[in-house]
Image (tube, rainbow, N blue to C red; front, top):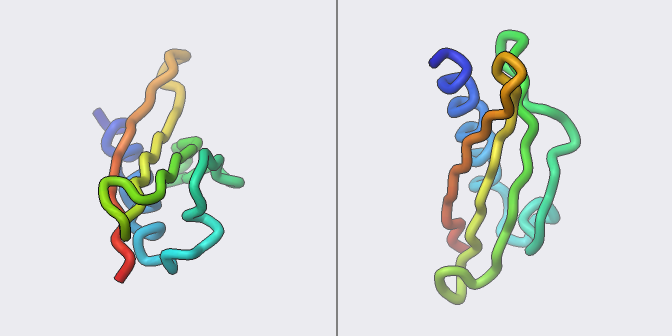
Length: 88
């Protein structure tokens, strides 16, 4: 449960940071992206990848699907969060 909590904190925190970037930011271009560095808290690390889809679900939005992955006792685990970014 502790690792799941940390992974949620890390992935949701990074997703929140993406939501405050400019709508035209390079990080928010359509396609699949991999984070250059792993996310970390208290020595626990999560690798992150995300996909951006333009005009989804409507003309002035982007759909961001962020997946964090880690190993728990040798078993791969992941969490996926989705958020809509609106051009304001």
